[in-house]
Length: 105
Image 1 (tube, rainbow, N blue to C red):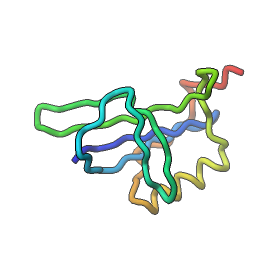
Image 2 (cartoon, rainbow, N blue to C red):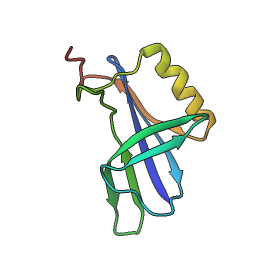
Image 3 (cartoon, rainbow, N blue to C red):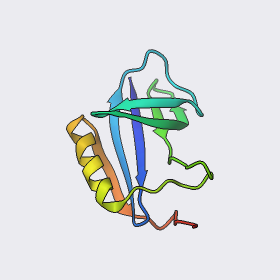
Image 4 (cartoon, rainbow, N blue to C red):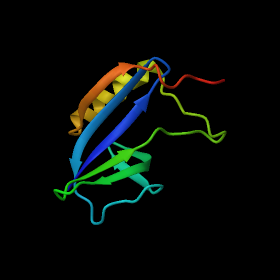
């Protein structure tokens, strides 16, 4: 069992949702995972943290487009997609204004 953190970024908002998941094997950084959330949502593992108590946290990173720029979600779609993920068992861990990443284009 691992805690999985999934990040969504729009130009205005950063949302982190979380869920406990079972894996046949713990994924490694750089690996793609397909999260089933009413449809497959491909995500890349950016970090895996193993704690001394045996727990594990898998962080799914910010998606990038073919130009290697952050692929921002549209604000209207963000709320709808987060709502769908909540129905699939994900919980919002944080939702804050996006002050760290801005659209560079």
